[in-house]
Structures are given as structure tokens and as C-alpha cells.
Length: 304
Image (cartoon, rainbow, N blue to C red):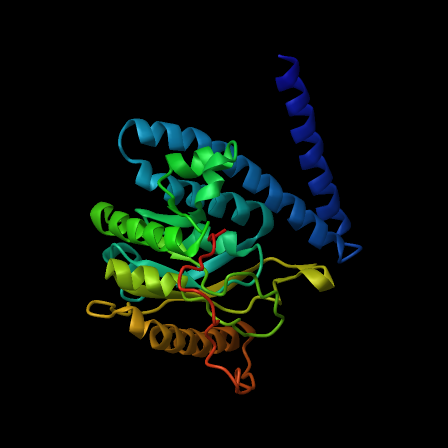
């Protein structure tokens, strides 16, 4: 009883503090950054709590593959209401609904990409995660219950076997996965992509499922952490046509990664120009490289 009482006090105080900073933003513009940051974390906490219950309930009725989709949607609505930020998903050919299974790839800018996932995450899709996360209390349990695809990166031999196991799971369960091939957040103020790691492409080739790029415009006009900028707004995000992998082998992965990155970079510039309403210069990207990281094909990144 005391725990619930103190929890109630904490939540009430947290909400009051958030409202205070929103009101203060009318006088001090930087206060809006703090207000939306607080609101974002609160939305994430509420969605996470809901996710644990949803994972248990959906697992019990055999629909655990829908867990991450329903949690993503809850975060989308909570975040939109509390911060005024959302991603406008353009999917002209309805690939999110019609193509399954697939390996979805997205550009990775900041922590706000969690909201992008909330807005576009398709049904019967999951993130990928390191196998070691299974042992983490709450997070690992939720990921296991919700059907996350785990990959063992302890060593190259085990990782290759784990990838094959993940590829089999994708085919057998018709389970799509979402990955960030850059491997980390870019935090760039202008449109750009870091070199792509090849793990996602190896996974798609082994599973023989299509790759579907999902590109969000550069949104530094909405969120720019270094400048303490966090504004309300709508960010364009486009689902591109599937890239087939049937018949491809490991020897095709380098070219597949290079051409996919080039396609996504071109779309990133186009979407950013649309978001800002102005043309942007397009400098030569990585003149001395093909934009693909020279790393083992088992290199993966948790989509979170």
C-alpha cells in the first residue's frame, strides 16, 4: 500500500514538473527542451509497464508476435499527446502490411528513433538483440516474451550459427525484424549516413527474404541535443520498395549493402528537403570508401 502511495506521489510530482517547464517555455525557450524530454521519458516508462502486461497476456493466447507492435503503438500515441512530435509514415504501396517476412532497415539519428519505430512498426515484427540481454531482468524477460530475435555474438563461429538460427526463425515463423545498419546513432545536424555494417544484409541473404529500407528525414530542426532544441513537429518518413535477396549469396553482400546505402542516402536528402522546404547541397559522400564498414558479417545492432 505504501509503495503505491509513494509511486502516486512520484508520478504526480513528475507530471507537475513537466507542466511547469512547459509553462516556463513561454518565457525561456530552452525550457521546452526539458519539458519534452521529461514527457518523453514518462511516455516510455508507461509504455514499458504496459508492455510487460501485454507480453504476458498475448503470450498466453499465442499472439506474442504482436507484442512489440502494440507497445510501439502505445508509445506513439502517448508521445504524440505529451510532446506534439510524430513521424508521418509514407508507405505508398502498403509494404508494411503486405510484405512478410522481411528485414526492415532504417537510418539511426537519435533516441527519438524509438518514436519512429512506434509510428511505423508493422505487425509480426521484432527488434534484434544480443543473446546476453536474455539474462537482464525485466528487459530481457520482456524481449523473450515478445518474440525478439536473439543473436549470439560471443565469437564468430557461434555468431554465424546464431544468424542461421535467426534466419530459420524468420522463415518458419514469418517473423520480420527491424535493424539499424549504421550500428549507432549519428547525431548529425545535416542529412548523412554512417558506414553500414553488413550483419543485417547477411541475415536477409541467409533467410532469403527482402530488405525494406525505411528512411526518416534529418530532424535536427525538431531535436538537436547539443543545442537543447526539442520542438513539436511532424517528421516525414518513407517506406521504400523491397529489395529482393532470393538467389543472392554471401559474396553479394558487399554490393547489396553499398547499393542499399546509396538508395537510402538519396531518399534521406529528398525527405529532408521536403521537411525543411529548401534544397540542400549534396557533397560527395565517402569519396575514399563505399560506405560499408569493413567488419565481420556477423556484426549486428540492437534496434532500440
